[in-house]
Image: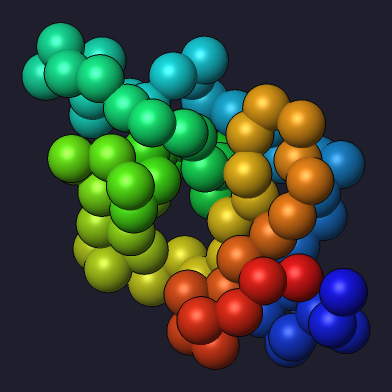
Length: 86
């Protein structure tokens, strides 16, 4: 894995927990998702880019929160600014 970028600098993954069990927006819309991503800044849970809603990406676009982690097992992280896995 690559060394993490500066966007992870102020993020404490151990202190960030998911706000919901599923995609917040998909649950409201009663739609399905493929996989989940959690914002490492605020804990927002959104669906991945393979999902119809693209809610994790839209969360980044609306908030500027650049880093997220794959749920549920947290095997990798992603920086939207650098478009790179970590």
